[in-house]
Length: 136
Figure 1 (cartoon, rainbow, N blue to C red):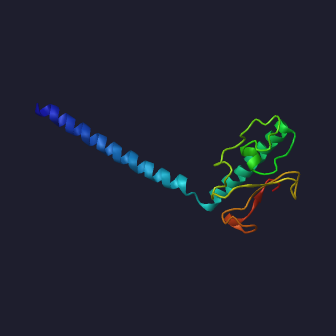
Figure 2: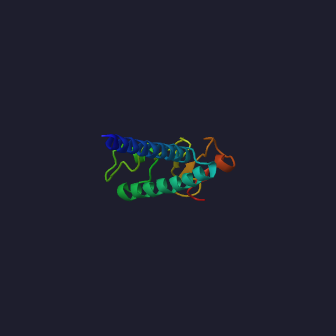
Figure 3: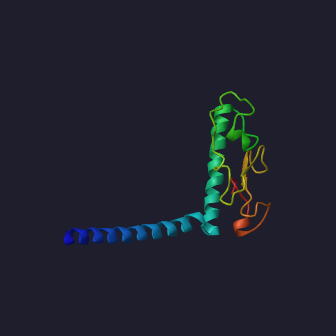
């Protein structure tokens, strides 16, 4: 009987060690993923601008019109024929800092400009606060 209880105790210790290791790894992974450095967020922001531009292009191919705002990609409020959306989700409509991307049609740089105002959400800025557009 003593050998059986000793085996159960060793198993419990091993499971506890594995549990602590997995919990620690999970905590570190959450910290790394949830708060990337500004350079990583800026890279994600550039990807987001390109992604929204591609989705706006799909919208144009489906409807024959450029989206007037980000809302056109989220819902068919204008009741356009051929609309096959939603083309993006509300979370995809926000940059890594939580600000909504901006669509201008016609744009200043092309027929359609997709813009992220960076970390501060204001026009202009440098580094993480710099604006990013699909023409860059």
